[in-house]
Image (cartoon, rainbow, N blue to C red; front, side, top):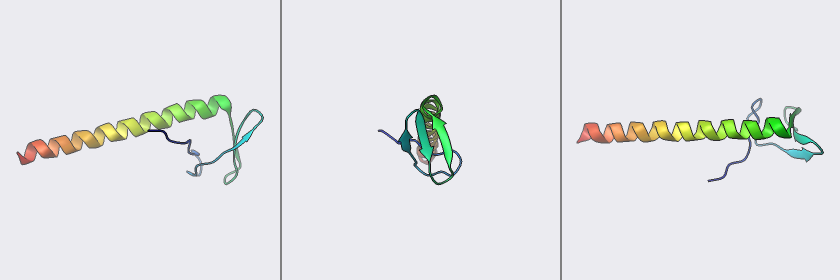
Length: 66
């Protein structure tokens, strides 16, 4: 599943691509390409960890109900 980058300051999906990076118009923050791609990796990791925790909780509840 593919997700877009989300601004860390205001939480909006941003991006006006500029010559050497991305710009969030809502909070007026500039992200270089390096920052944007590393942030994208961090956000993807957070989504995966959240999904893993939810899966663990559901499996635990399922085991307890048995």
